[in-house]
Image (cartoon, rainbow over all chains, first blue to last red; front, side):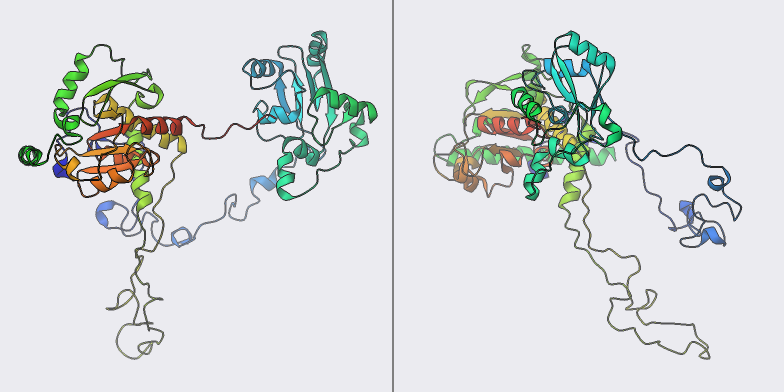
Length: 222
Length: 282
């Protein structure tokens, strides 16, 4: 093989002239491999005692029997199990996405389109909240919208609808193919819980709302 | 050290010269000019460097500007020009990335079927060889302990995968780098077709013995196919890969890279395809 190769000229790329950047890799610590290594006899563990044994040492946060810090200090605050977290969507992002052709403004933009076009990220929490950085005309059913964003869109001749989806419904909206793959039926849309009723204009349409006309019809009959 | 490398250099030059002489002899024996002859004949590294520097129209390397290269036929005559995509053939040459990709390839191909027997796997040794106390000799529990002759091996090799992970983007970057390096060095040649009139090694054997990787579309493709595979199967200085098989290690271990137009198109398409398919917005 080498006999058929010509000598590598200066500056040419060959298997013997490539190297990773300096500092890109660490050399492994070889423990217990002789005096010269500096990590020979005791492998850097010192002499005797709990920490020199295999699996030795105490668990993290253990302070030798004294009440550890995480128990000494009182609890503070509370955890809200009913908290709803929305992925934010600013109007500037929306405008950019539409201008770049990543979203089709001539049709209703639902949360499914928003997620699929990567405008709100892949992991939706409880839905999408529209925020007011920028403004343009379009129709967008989202979970929540800030007052200024809504004003801006309505002033521009568009409309915003706040629709309620529970976790299962949101999945049916954004990934209906998952249900098809599992051989399951799409769930019926869930009503919002009483405490959230005032925050939403209607419950979400399932199967996913695709175009405005069908959506409006459905809203009228519901 | 320097003397040794000088000596090796001199030896390799002598071998190369010998190969040339042999090649010229062979060329006389074969009827008609063999394929690939002038394709690789004059294209020594130094002459290519001069050619590259002489042509002023070449865009700066590493700028991702499209490269216009001569389109050659099998005899090495120019039959037109061909435009190589700059995003594939004119990227920055990242030697660190090339090194990582080569390491990834070589690690992944290691079989990992090495194994020694531990003390539990060596036959026998279940019985305590002698009483614990009273013998005046050391305490022993098994005749297969590592310190015994015929005992098991402590911390020996076990069958495992040596593969390391490398991001797809890095692997692609590596392939672009390798192709760009060959293009920059003038050791990337684009030919219209590599299909031979007959599946004969003699048609290739007269060409100078350059370490070369050929690439056609596929074994069934119109630009090389089975005949070319048969013809170059016994030539140790020629490798042949279908376009889908082009990889960093195979490219770098050979001096020259000869691609057919269709192979170029296929590899460009492969490298431009998004890694994560665009989710449909329908």
